Image (cartoon, rainbow, N blue to C red; front, side, top):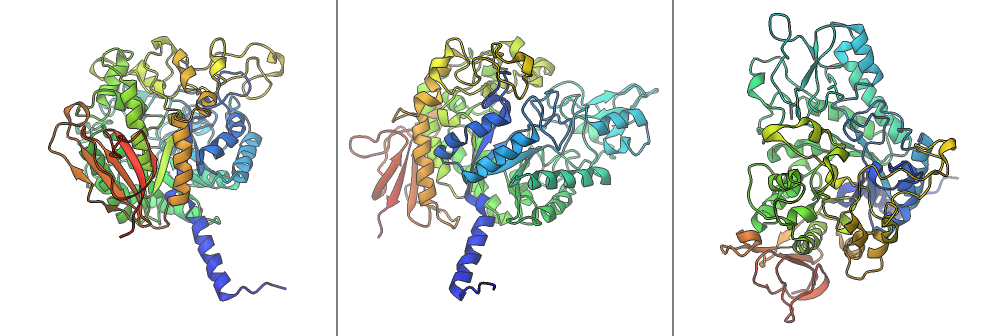
Length: 601
């Protein structure tokens, strides 16, 4: 006999269902770069089983979801973002059984799984690209990618003069004379999203991972799928523009057509209970971010303006305002991120001189190009600012995206020897565009301080174990070195050491995330406090203007961050958590954040 619910219990059930469907609205999502998270076999590469082995650590940290960077079969021309097979696990990282076990273990712990999907380009080892090369010009197989005839009398010149993201030409010629487009490396040919085969195959891929336990997706280069290559002014545009227009007129990025693709994806997401979601990596004009995050498309979009900013009050305030406005326009929730696998770690960025530049993080990239020797990295200051920043971020309405290792306070590894680098940027960029790349934020994590003398800080076992990347005949041999070298100073940041230190970055993150779960209201409103104010004084970082960012949530939870040299008084209320010590008189010193429960009027 069916159970008949009372009107009240039916309402409670409906509310519970809505909450379950909207889990991602104000979640904390932890990005795992699998190859650098935890190696369980001694191959020198992190693996899927390694993530599973640290679920208890992640649960104790207090996250709501794991975002897995690509773990597909790949030749690693671009850290796994060159995908050979979208519906499998790289044997070097494990098996589909390993993924299924990870999803089950995470879900048992109350942690969701977000899979990184790469729809702008495949690998040149993908079966469809091999078929395109074999089939020749004008074939249906070749139409799945972007092939064009060249310029010049014999087609010897590329269709445009574009330089790819990682340096070198954005077009490569094939033996029959045509050229294919790759906005990134030569091993990453761009898909032709006008082709129905491509559209249908990605729908198949979405369903595949959702059926295997994924709860959502992070969409790589979400703004790049649709391109207008039939116009005469293509050489007037760059593959790496400093900014994008607000009208969708760039031929390569943020075309209006892309939103039709995501509306189709939304129909797939809504087939599941609760509906799946996705977050777009879309480096677009802030005025157009909201388009990707609407409830009939992906659901969320990264607010990269927050990640771009220096530690300057007015810049940070602007990024917060823009993020909130984008969320309001989309009807979704904001996202906040300071670091990921593509940018220098924010503890180092905030430790370097805070000076304006034409491109975001330019000074950090220049510092890396010279192996960290050109500017002083004041780690004490960087740590203090990073501690203040995470509290300022976590109290904001919306979702916070953390990058592995930031909870340990890791700095960028600036002095990786050039012959050890893996990022194609270091190999392909040149002259004025020379760049060392992104490997400094991708160095394998330190888990055990004492294992650093001859080991890998607990990243790998001491000897090989059969499994991902290790065959039966290799068992018992010494483990391979970590795929990127770890510096000696990692010992001070190892997870086992920080877990027992009351003032460590890890302890702060655990306390902050636990409090966030208690304090986060259901609504996403924010009110600026009277204490929120700019400053005309050059008493902020490196002579920038100081000032205060101060706001409250609807339940009286408040966050106050002081960027200026002069300590400031806190509003009346109970101090819940601070990123550093208050002054003896209770005022908030520079580069410090306090959380309070405001006193009721």
